Image 1 (cartoon, rainbow, N blue to C red):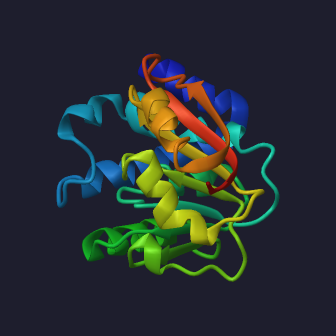
Image 2: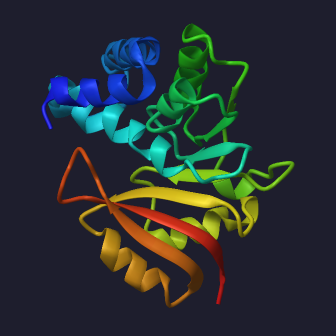
Length: 207
């Protein structure tokens, strides 16, 4: 997927105004990359394909989720969490333990005018306790699938939708997770990286 194709994908599904907001976030991300290692420098020239649209593709996969909080684990550079907040009207909680990245996420949410819907929690996800089970969980390159579920399952219920980009290891991680966790697991091909997969899971519970 070329950069223009990636931008067009967002524009066609979410409209020009939301595409423009994602573009603003991209500029904030590139500027901050001068000060901390948020994303690999080698990917700056392919920002839409590698990061922005790669994150945006999770939003349609959450179409069947109930109303409520979208929890993004290990948000780091705001991928996918801040992109989700720009493309939806959901409340979004970003959990990030690194203080410098917490500051970046809060500053970016303020700059983008979405701070009223975005909560940044400066801790590990094991310490996060939501008032109600979250509707969606996302995490990008955080941990192996079984370990990620274990660290996060206390924030969910059986209706929660899990959206977890896992790269080439998606199916093998699902196979391993099934030994410990029951539920519905599906691997969705990534639109931006055809050899990568996104784990979509529901009705998750311990065996």
